[in-house]
Length: 277
Image (cartoon, rainbow, N blue to C red; front, top):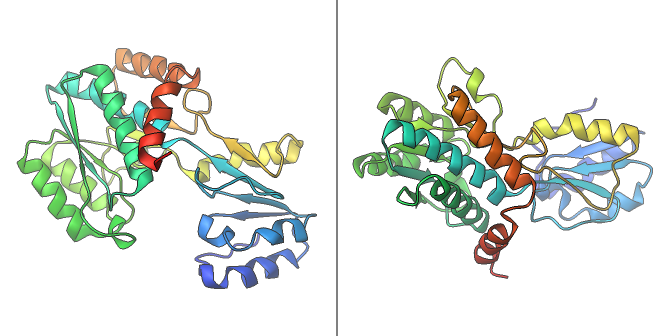
C-alpha cells in the first residue's frame, strides 16, 4: 500500500491526483476535508474504487463509497451502558466533556442523555464545552478545568468526547475513581497504562476490514454509503470492559433494539433538534 499521511486540505487535489496516476486500484480517504473539493476526481479516475471515511454529514457522491454511522445510535448505547454502571455504583451524575456546541456533539450528547434515562430517569448528564472550535478537542488545559469543575459538582462518570485531550482526562478520571469510557476506540479495554469501564466504538479503522471484504466481493457500490449500525455491525456501539453477565446481557438486548429500529422516532427527533431540520 501507498500511505500519504497528514494531507493538508489545501494541497489535497495534488496529492490525490498523484496517487490516482500511479495505477492504484483503490484510494481510501480518511477525512471529509480531503474529499470535499475534489469530487470530480472520483469520476475522472473512474477505474479507481474511491472510499472515504467522510462522516455522516457528507452527501452521497457519484464515484465514491463513504462509510457512515449514527452518533445518536452510538450514544444511546453508551448512555445506557453508563446508566447500568451507575446503578451498580450508586452514582447518578455524568459529565460529558465536548468542545464547542457543534451539532454532532449535541446529537451525541442528547443520544447519551436518552440512553441514560432508559435506565433511570433521575440520572443526569451535563454537556461541558471547554473552548472554541477547532482546537479545543485537543486543549488539555481547557478540558482539565472543565473536568475539575464537574468533579466539584459531584460527577460520578465522565465521557471525554474529545480528541488529543481525551487520554489526559481519562487519567484524571482513573485517579478519582470515576466511570470512564472511550470515544471511538475499540482497544480501550486492552490498555494497561490507563483504564476504561466502557468502550464506545466508532473507530473508522475498524470499518476497513468489512469494507475491503465487500469491495473485493463486489457487494460494495460507489455513489452511496455503507452504514454501520448499532446492534447489527459489531464495529459500533458500547460494550463493557468488565461488566457482569447481567449487565452484558441487558446492553446486548438494548443494542439489538437499536438495530431493529425501535428508537427511530427518537433518533429523528434528536437529529432534527441538533441540525435544525
